[in-house]
Image (cartoon, rainbow, N blue to C red; front, side, top):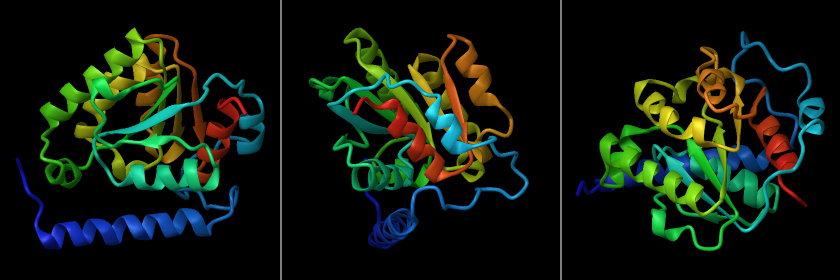
Length: 212
């Protein structure tokens, strides 16, 4: 097992705190686009309005790739949207409990996996097991990518190939989907995909997808 150094742990805490502050200090709908040259969806609110609720609680949030994006998602879904979902970044297949929804935060971090004592092969194995267990139990899977272009790369792509085709719905920030890989993978099993302009748009979409 890889044990993170004190300096790495401190840096991770500082980074997570900064990301949480960003989410909590920005009103929904006012965050800037992740990339100035990214082609934004016509209207985040209009896109969210067209979505039909398909996910229900209780729900569990886990990470595929162990990036700090899960800290942002936790603040967005639980603090801002008050969904009250359980957060388990390294959830095992046996820990799904009575969940009706599994939210998988997509985005790999080699530092995050290292700090968790994982490498890519182990994380892929865990992710596959969680997805398989969810499908067997009839738990709906929501894939969520909020990290943008900086959170893409081969490591993340390997995890996307495992998760995206098995989702019930996928929400992705546009700057993280410039190559349209999400669309290609989702199309394999006709998985509905919603592309949004920014983090606030992701929140609007998730809110619309959950039964109130």
